[in-house]
Image (cartoon, rainbow, N blue to C red; front, side, top):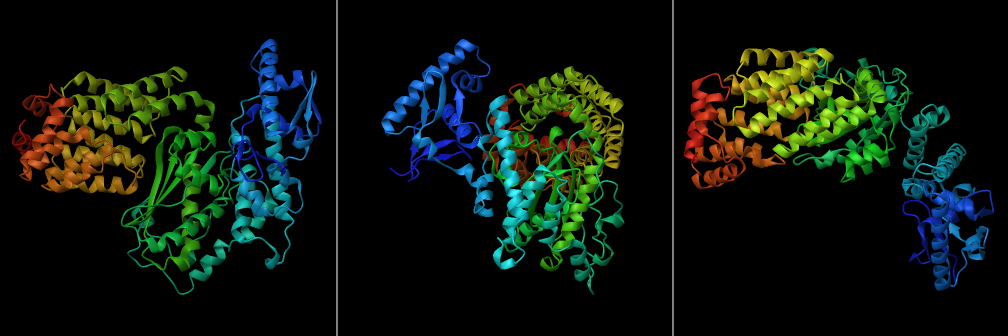
Length: 628
């Protein structure tokens, strides 16, 4: 029989030489790992039981071990193999266990290729699922050993290019090591040696070349109109090496691979992927932030539960990149608040391939600047993690525009205030839930709006430099009919944070209600551009603006982009009616009636805060045609 194989990276599994899984107790395989990879040839039975069931009392530990030993003996008898030799007092490796092939042992061999080590490290050792305790601490020491061996192999590679692994493998190894230790200067030097210098690339790219005068990007926070054009390459000085303020622990940043949106040029995908790699290398020059290795970032992007992945890898900042018709969208999300703190669009209608390094430096520099500006919220998060977790739980639910979700979100925000009574983001979240409930119930309950206003003012009181409180105050004032005060508060929000797409969206909504739908439509389009992965209320607002400028099909199309479209069925019914499609209009009216059986058109229009009569009458006409 060929030697059995123990897989320790990814799922812990015992396999035959042909790769077939063999049934064997998982906890027993953990003991095999410790005996094969550790320095001790034997484990006492009482020691093994305490390792495997640390939370149980001694009697329960012994009972559990006896049951497991029985299962081990049955499995070994079935396979005619002795992997563990167990007597009344001790556990050792049997003959087959001593000859067991184990993937992790490859790190200790001098002849293991770098690519093989990387293939293993793309998976998590023992699945990364061990609870806190002695076994977890032992596994962490093993992981340290794996990365130490990887580092030794990387730094001992021969200087001749023909004898070295490909550059991609070397860079992946360097990223993995810098993710664990940003101060590893020999590894950093090797990474930079295997990537052309950004400064040299800029100087060569700048030789006789300047950007077209129409090249524009969306201004970031603090920008002036003159800042929005990419500068002449010869004048750009990379500043990504500025050190961020030291925090209690290094924040972790995940730079996701570019997502491809409909209509984007597929011919640029390879070059844009290389651009993201260049940005990651530039960010690695920062000593006080840990960059998640690219293969991990790719897994985060592909995961069906990104939030869980971000929590697993302790990511504080997510840099999301999207290749779309308009160019490359880059946005930074502060994960603890699930909030976009910066976004820019980079036009790629230039000789992109030849100037990729320069654009990477510009983007990396912008990211570094925004991380510096966001240091205070990060430090607060580290001091009050429970409040942020409760807040984030509420914030997730507000993405679904339904009453159960909105009220569930409110509970999350209130829980956050139990951990920290002056937590401004929770006051913002509560204000938002009351305003949204007012919209969704359509009953004209001003009590909800006064609660929204009160909580928005509490947020401003706690954090007067944050745009979020002014944004929610503007929304509450809008629905209360104080349009001038609403526009004033929202203008203040935009001034405090020109990149804050949510504030721009609310400003657009207020302009629509102030009977300036054309201005509102322009502004909401800008918000969507800033945040291409827009929440439903952006598209809802864009649909309303489109309706009031007479673009009824555009209104329907915007609603079609919403993840949860039923909340906009009333507006969709009006738009179809104005297009003359009465049958479809009445179908959506019936759906809206099912969700809102108490809706009264005259009452709703009487409380709807719209400045000029023509706009209310246009809405009344569409709804009346739809059968309201």
